[in-house]
Image 1 (cartoon, rainbow, N blue to C red):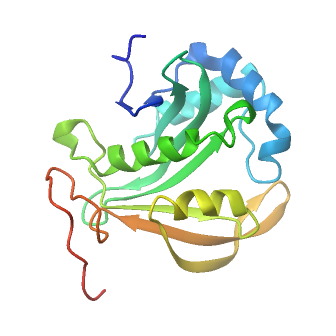
Image 2: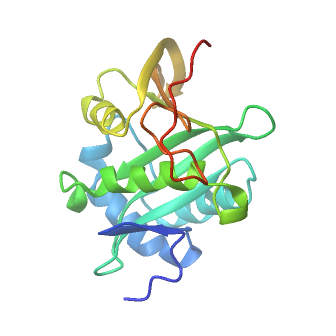
Length: 200
């Protein structure tokens, strides 16, 4: 299997950019996963919805989007987006992600988020996004998503009532975050574990 088009790979999955030609496969997987995604996610389920969605993603410098693909087959298993990217002194982004039903519960998204964190914190001169901090805003009842980020070392930082208007209603969210210098995490560009950061 040719892996040169992947941005980053792990043992079983790789992340690669969205392509317009992925529309039929992506939307078929999203359509069959509606029961898994509802009421948390609403990815495009038709090619007519997918095309402008992926065009906006590709044309926005404040976002980076990746398909999660199984290396053995190239099949699309989910997606990870880094949204609201702010550089300068802040160097932060917000994660959005979803697994497709055929891949749920198989460890695919755990590996994919590990790769997304690695890529986000990698320096730009090594092809990464050069970020320092990632956030994930998750609805409190979405236990599977919370377990996923907790397993990646994210910590709960706060609660935001009526944070987003989703599917016709205001939804509360918890804010989970991880930084490039979390205790035990390797600093980007080095092989040494980071020291705990003191203070705020």
